[in-house]
Length: 386
Image 1: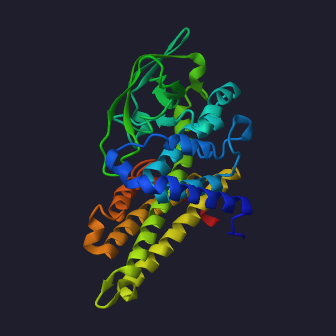
Image 2: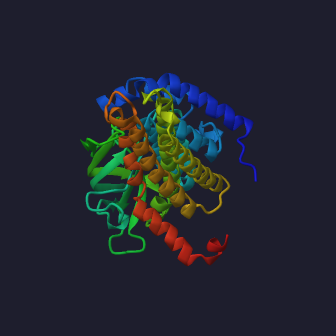
Image 3: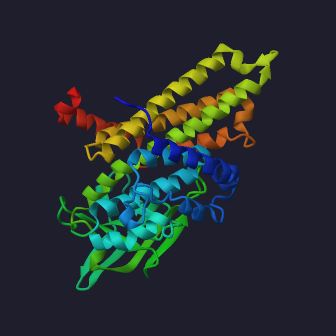
């Protein structure tokens, strides 16, 4: 068992870290305050190839492995949680389903522009009345002779403000509970598709969380992604990959908090010595480091399984569950190390804590992750024995 990164992975990590320290981290607080990405950042991310990390080279991507992708998301999130989820949601929730379920024509139409960042992607499943219960969606896609007419409202769409391409889920067969929903690729410029409310959030404020409104939005027959009636299957398979991305985001936020707390512990003087000399602080830092390493290994393992086309649904749920809960504990502990200063916006740890909170909610709450893991334990004895 070899836990070492290969040379290509190390070079990528170092290049992305250098880019983040120069281009992403310096304006993280400004992004948070303004609630948007500054002009030019998305273009720079695209020029670095960060929107097409594991897109095959024949579709204009870098053709890298999934572990390289999660390292990239971790480094971006270490610098700015909102930037990390911009890239993660684009990859995991839009690029991935097109790669896995799209026709060759769909792949050649959308992936080259998505891989370069010329187009940004999003995933639209949640509705005001259906969150964890995705099957309760009411947005309709009505079949016509020449295409589909979409009517309904979606909310909590990450990247919804920036996106050009939407992987949308709508009800096509309301009377068939087993094949009720289908997936579609919808270009946001399509008449009848509009952006509604942009949510004001506790954290990841630069990342848009949008309402999408579909009012007789017509799309052609070939907008169908995968088989008719298999939309819930597409959604759940896609969310498995999305959970790995959120786990990587959570690890990056945790790593940033640990680094900030460690540096502060070395320089903050109380009782004539750095607070890092006190065992109470040392134990906090030790617990933070240990938890982060465990979360990272779970995340990389899930990514490795995905890369090697092995089942990874429960492993992705474990990675997301542990990494998200670790990120909340670690960022909270970092504020405790800073004391009163940690509660002030002059230091980044309060922003890191706000950014971390969402990781226990999107791509399935912690409760849903536990449900996925428990079902695997009960339904697959061979997995239990592994």
